[in-house]
Length: 260
Image (cartoon, rainbow, N blue to C red; front, side, top):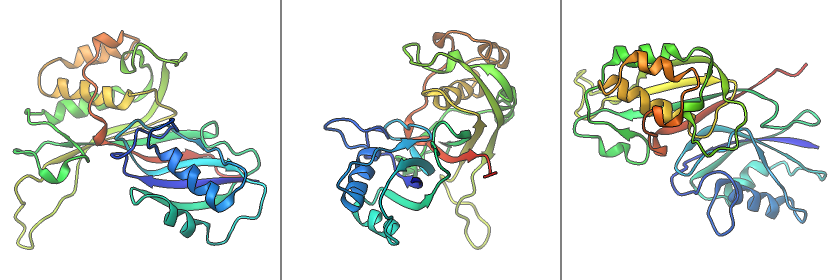
């Protein structure tokens, strides 16, 4: 029988999602816990979207096949065996043949920028601290350019396993992040956070992080918006901007077609 696993995790302590020999990974930790609870046969997870080291997830989805009887307390058992940086949110039966990666029709990511001066110490490991002045109107304009189908070759490493570089972006926008407020309405120092939200059919490696790094260069005046638009026509990776650090990136949600 096929099962769907919903997971949240802090990516900071891990070398990414994918299992690696002699490295601490999210997949490795969860598969070990599944083996303890459901053994003796090893469980192999298929994930909706592999995340790099330092990248977080709010509702990652993975699938696995299991021929035995699923314990009713499986969620509690797995959370007792996985480290505190991982939370198993749900283990549910899935339609026959369900594949978390292949069956996904969209992924939504959020990237957090700490724009406070000085940078908030509470954002360490959770956001990218940017101290340059950023033009919010230019950030929004750059995000609007992303809507639709484009060639994102410039936004993934040159050395890549990808063969198709076109992606369809359904939504992209920058938002102010809600933060702490005093009861009298005064805003505390160091509470300026921005969020970039993007939903697409699929993403290439480092795509969101390179998009954010390049949009920040538009917003700080290092490059103009027309240059950014040209990058969406299949430019070389060397033409785009820096890769924003992983700690600001969150996989928020994976979309699937409703059961027929």
